[in-house]
Image (cartoon, rainbow over the protein chains, first blue to last red):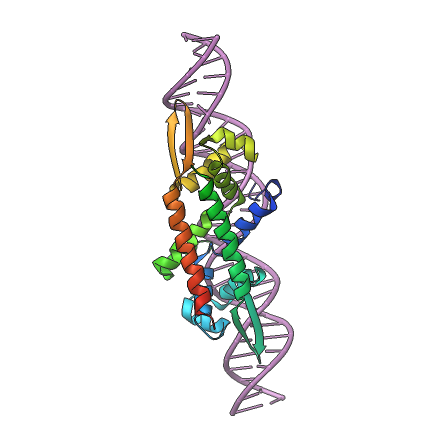
Length: 107
Length: 107
DNA sequence: TATTATTATCGTAATATTGCGATATTACGA
DNA sequence: TCGTAATATCGCAATATTACGATAATAATA
């Protein structure tokens, strides 16, 4: 029974959880922060900066990318990543709504 | 190698990840939302509302409680929970700072 | 052409997380 | 006093997640 019963929750509840999940690992927070400070950066920069293996960084990049938070393009053999700001702001808005609604409900 | 290398990240990175982790499961999002809509509620209300077992709800409440987001007091045999708004707002502020800083950094 | 660099993916082992039944403890009502 | 209700915790099985070595494919350079 290690699988989450996503079917019992509403779409908006699942959405908040999915968003939060992207940030629930420090590697991914660190990656996002580092990328935001560069004009663009490549997987191996992150390997050097963060100190995890290339395979692991690539895995975490995949999670972030699947969430829509990255734009990437190849420059030769190097894949150069930068943030998808619009998506980032979408996430911020959704989380803020959740927080604000939740605290406003309370007496 | 299933354990996160938390020691390689800064405290503030770990903090963001820890906060996000509380919301990374839909049960906990749902619990927080439901509690916010009541004057106070008990574990069994949540069992009925969400549809997970009492043991599971109690587990999730424990995660939320350990994050400091709950106030609870016994009324007889019933433990009545409500939100710790201050802590909630702390989390919101920290997450917002992270999002705002990250998007502001970008060109 | 050979060598090096870059990266996504696969496979694996270790650990964390999820869900739940069982249970012990406490409170309450008949 | 007994029966019921409420809840945290334990133990367990199943699944997800984490980290990494190995590897294949591609690009660039000597």
